[in-house]
Length: 272
Image (cartoon, rainbow, N blue to C red; front, side, top):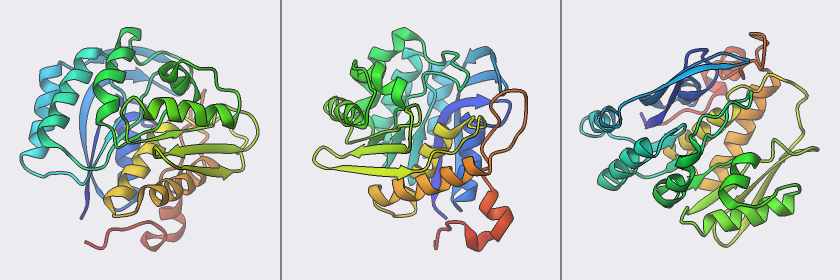
């Protein structure tokens, strides 16, 4: 069985963060593991508090996974402080895992900040150069690239600018724009666009976590990057289309819709 590690924050409400990642890994038939970087007290409509884990403990969690089990892909989500970023970057250099997917989480769905402003420069200097794929949404891409994004053409320009910062590939997600949901993947030479109809729902809590985890799962399963993004886009679109109307705010996506509807044969599975 393929093995995928999530390095991210914990969402006690179960819709985003580590919890969303582990559900996504399970839905793809890979073995999920987690390194908790922050504990976030949040629900579908607000973030109450954040407790960051000591960077030493973050590093030791990573050691615990790599010295025993190993990984086929790594998904990195919420890293709220420069200290956490440095700890993770050092371990990436030590273990050199393949298929590192970084979702640069800066804001919760309700707009609450999840990354300290002082950490953005560290993200650019220490984390982005170690990413095989970076998956920013529009606000995150604007912060990193320093440009305003209002059209697909701007997404392409942002992807090019961010790719020059050291990430091998950049996927700029267009969920915050109007019209169809278009995502732009840039590999340093070519652009790939992934276009689906926009789903009219407020229940999109954890979509970024879910999308990036699905990409990491598909990479671990041996798919190419463009195919991994395509499959992940289909998966997250289905999860949004059948999202759960839970809570008073933005409800979570439905990570196991296909499993409940069709059984294991309806889900991606590892042959190993």
